[in-house]
Length: 265
Image: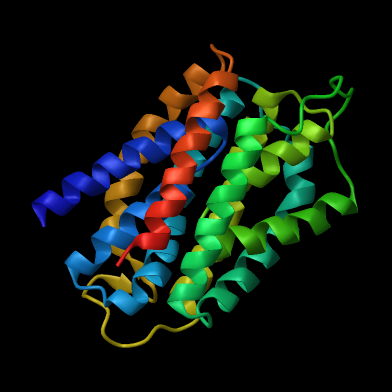
């Protein structure tokens, strides 16, 4: 178990840096790694994708809190926008997790791999580009509706929603660094609702000790511990450098992540 804990901590460190840097909780990276790792910890292979999704989202709760706190200190969280998005994110996250537990693992695997490809393309193209910065934070019922879709998709692919929330806010005239900070706060709501859904909506027998529903708590705890410590590092870098070159590198990495999920045993 000690070797597994080292891997969980390493995964958490990567997720934390990505959360602070790009507004992404590292969920796709976590899911890909956990799909390979969890069967060695006693998780049945046919449930590995479900448990990977649930565990990644549970860990993102603390990752997002740490990242959001760091961005809030720097004034880059648009709380009025968060308030409009959160109701939709909560409902969408709960419903998305309910759908995921009813889908076959292979369907989820293909869905995650496809989403990785789309996210990689969006990052590589750096789309949408920033508009002229708007005077006030975006708000209104349309953002609650958008939050529902973001929450549901996030629950199905195991992410904190940053790869959708950040482009939406940038498209609406929010400065990228503020879009990242706002996305980090939104990711907490997505992760809470989704992880609760995976934990409370029932799970089949055969999962190892330490499981709460589909959430494998030892992995979630190890990942969260390291991610909380590393998220502020990503935040500092996000405020110090241009992210365009890094986005292209991460786009290629996401394509590899998608392939890893698709070909996992």
